[in-house]
Image: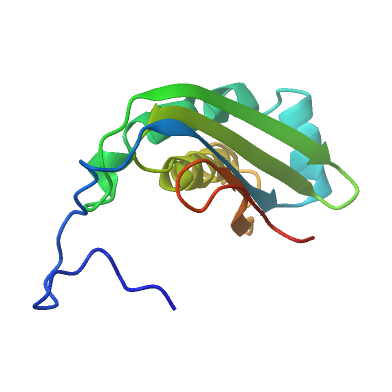
Amino acid sequence: MTAISHLDEKGKARMVDVTRKASTVRTAVVRGKVLMHPETVDMIESEGIAKGNVLGVAKIAGIMAAKRTSDLIPMCHPLELTGIDMQFTINRDRGEIAIEAKVSTVGRTGVEMEAMTAVSVAALTIYDMCKSADKWMILSDIKLMTKQGGKSGTLVRES
């Protein structure tokens, strides 16, 4: 097991010093989903939700959230993100919208938290915009799928 790097020698919280780490290209892909009634999916696809274009707004919200991650998560380093791609896949039969964020940078620390934040806030945005149509939506399965760069190299989640 790896030592917890956000604790100092006295067990107190600290921000990790990455000064001596080499800058590398770093990418993380995170997926999650929102489960809802199939009729709610229909409303989203036909832009029948009163608050507007749900997936368009959720995409912008996810991108904005990734850029603000260090403002939300106390021990995250502020990063210069070089790319953020948000994708949505609709499965009406399952009443599901899958969300994927791919976040990239060239830096000394990874972008997993930025990708996680992007997916989480996009899911919350979908919930917020659709809650009047479907109060029982479920935000689900937010997880790291791949990570590239840095000391640990490439990691890929097994299906």
